[in-house]
Length: 222
Image 1 (cartoon, rainbow, N blue to C red):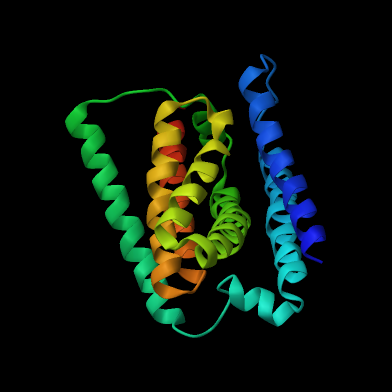
Image 2: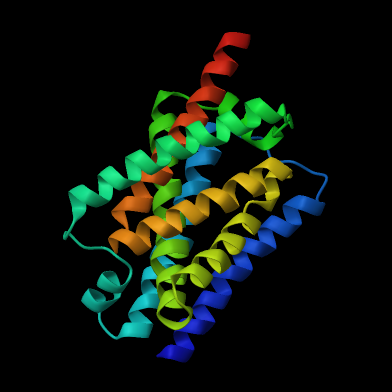
């Protein structure tokens, strides 16, 4: 069962990083539309979310043990959600302050294109699907599994590097830095609460606010 788990995980990671590398070196672009956004997010949820849970099942031998090991639990739910909300808002404030003080500017074409393609429904569902798929894989499976072997600090750093590199297709340095640092915050949240609801709500809120800013900016330019 463990061999099947590692083979499946390798396949999932190959899909993630293979597509990211192809996007970096490819000059062709696929038009971003609401339909394409939803289809891609549902595909990610199937591969990353469902795939990660299946890997955990192979590792632990039962669905209940797999979900518990990944932090899918009711215990401490309110505390986990509150931690996630506060951490996300503090990170947004801190990162915005740093960018404002340093005057750092860099275009993020893919993020801008996604923002210009949003509608009110996608604005909600996109952050939900993104948070579910990415947190289930990176925090629920990879970090929690590594944490039992290396300790949480090393696990959070390794997971954050993997999480950041999964965003190579944005082709923006600021995106890699932001995803790495925010991933460290998410890693601390799941370590502190042992509940995946904490990084899930933080991730959703961060993505929602970021997309909302792009969405409002695109509306103002029309």
